[in-house]
Length: 346
Image (cartoon, rainbow, N blue to C red):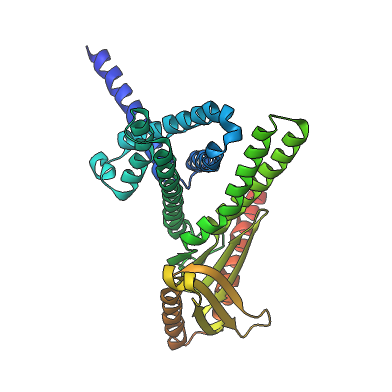
């Protein structure tokens, strides 16, 4: 009897551990498996959206069963994801009625409505297009939120002072991400169109592969730009992080070195959606720094300006931060030398 109770307890612990891992993967997509799952779902969404215009081309009537098969696979994947989110969530009811939960459910509902004949094919694909764009935005929002939360705890990829705290993280506006998705979507549609209209001819395959390569590069560039291009605002400095296809560029500016900072949201789209550029002018020979397409640029500038005023009021100097950093590096080298000396003595 006792052995049975212990087995049940172990089994319960295993299930709870699986739930925790599942919750971390689905709700915190900044981790490795979370990124993999998010990327796979994003690829399915992009392919699904790219297939929609091909469905209405008469010459591709023979390929419609394959389009439908892909949509079935996509809906199965989204349905499993939705059920796993409910199962692994700490508060399932709250998730179901949340905005993100409603989007996850809405993406799969049109397929089942079309299956039982409640909506036509044209209505189905129009709904699918709109809802899958929302689903893509939902993935963007989840990873963006996770990036901010993790960044505030781990200080991103830069070296931080012991007393340095990330107070705010500013990122690019989502509308810029969606605009950047237009080239990969068009390129993917062209690749599939060429491949299907010429029915797998060698030259068609070559052009399709070329367009798909462009699609992948465009998508990766858009994903990196609008997920990992951020401004870290700390209690000591402003850090501009720019992620490229190969490597990361980081510029840090202490508040005392800033001579002027100004937002710029001129333009119809910028004004309507609330995004713009931030230009930071410094006295250094390296010149000015610009961060483009940031959300709420005026609020970000106001926050940086307030921190700058506090730094100037405290009587700090531009070299103060450098002295602290050098002191930290010196202390680190001293500790290493102490360890080496102790090893040699033994």
